Length: 544
Image (tube, rainbow, N blue to C red; front, top):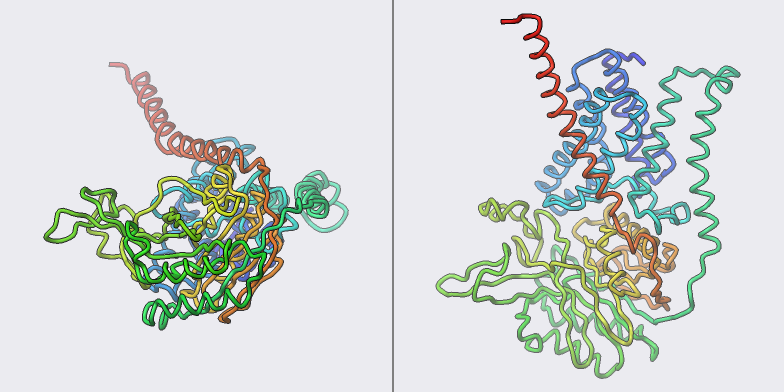
């Protein structure tokens, strides 16, 4: 398909707009995701057909993905303007490079492998983007269906990246139909009925299976009464400035007014305990003392709460350790979650840290980057973190402690479930993003974690949305934005494991290795072999 420069740019922009409109709370028209890549694929085909330089593909792809990034995550600006610009530019660059590598590899291989190459490169990118220092899996394509849990019940087998493959395959098949120059009328159906039928089958069958699974899935009745508290404390002008003990007293009062004699767990949001304390002397914290008194009066209630903590070391413990001037000690700060009962406090550090805010990427190799850290209240710079996913046991139950950003990592939470978690408890503070799609998207992603693991979820947010989500991914109860509130609900615990819980992202890990191999093969090995072949041919033509 041959296109002029103007139409190539218009189509590239159209792909970006369709991705934005299909994404949750940026449009939420999820079915448009099935045609969102078609314009960009048509552009790539036009460039390949005319044998234009490959750099043109990169330029058009960058336009598409820049629109996608800005249109869906513009709200990052409210937390950090500089961080937002960096995220838009870099993430768009990574996506455009992925599509560019797909194009380069496609030129080296037979056209019949194009669909496989597209899936391998994009899913490989999504997996690797979950793993590295600048991890940002927010825009994983499979997240598009987070508002439609009834359509993706099969995520319990594939995880969210199964949805990414689904979107890519349908887009490519539609692109094939379009690129064949079809026209309306009888000829259209006669010549391309097989392709159209294949598109419909791949689009409809997973939906029918999901609806069937959604309607028949029954939770085992094994209720645990949980209260989630939403204190609604302004993170910009109040949370880190007002009296921390008064904040805790206010939260405990809200919990007291909503709990019943059957309540087993009460959740407070991320960094609800603002005043950082030494983990070695937990009971010296006035906030912990107030909470423990509440627990004793309301036994057997267990409190799950977020806190800022620190620990001292005689030697450098990790990249997060900071040397204390004029001493022989190091200090390490944490964004922690704490399970508190009448006798014990179980402290777990946040594992998945937000790049630029809680973790300075590559600072292990470039220590000076620590000076560029963003401060969003509390402590700036790289924080300490857990090395492996952990769970907490309380009241004859095991639950997964999940702090904010961790809730968008499917395999991380699947590992917690594999380790024995029967419920998922999420605590977060989404107020940094103000009243934008950001906090709504974050809450909706939790539905995908419920499906992947078949675990009920309790979610406590500082300013909204706090919610309860059942094992089918349905939000069964939620609060409003910027409104102090609390919710109470009976969550059914579950100890059965899904296929995704057992195997996680192993398939996508293999795909990422294949993507790396194909990149090296097409950009390094094949050009070298071609050069050797040319030199040998030259030597034969010109014998010495």
